[in-house]
Figure (cartoon, rainbow, N blue to C red):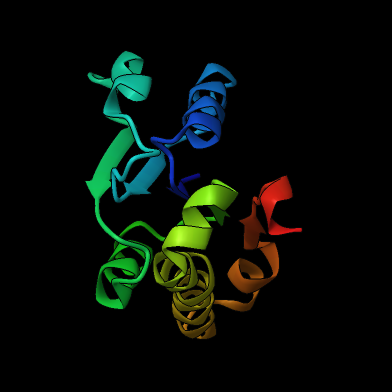
Length: 137
């Protein structure tokens, strides 16, 4: 079954996606904004893989997230998308609040609303996995 991955072009996210396919675990919808941390070259091996759907977009775009959930009905959302590097947060904290807090909230809310429309078994089986870094501490 399909999963939705955010930040899947970043270092950790892309390695997760590549490993997911190496395990033969199923299709991936990969949502990434391609900021300084995202690199499409990390996913070069999946260029011709029809089970890998790359979507260039922002987790704060609630309409986009809603459309992806409704169209692909994933069994899980694995959330890697984040601003990182403490030194960057000191000089530009607004970007960190927008992505790391408001973006995560947008994902949670759109997922909650979408799940309310699903069958009971789909709600029970769905997982939202938020992957973070040591930099949040």
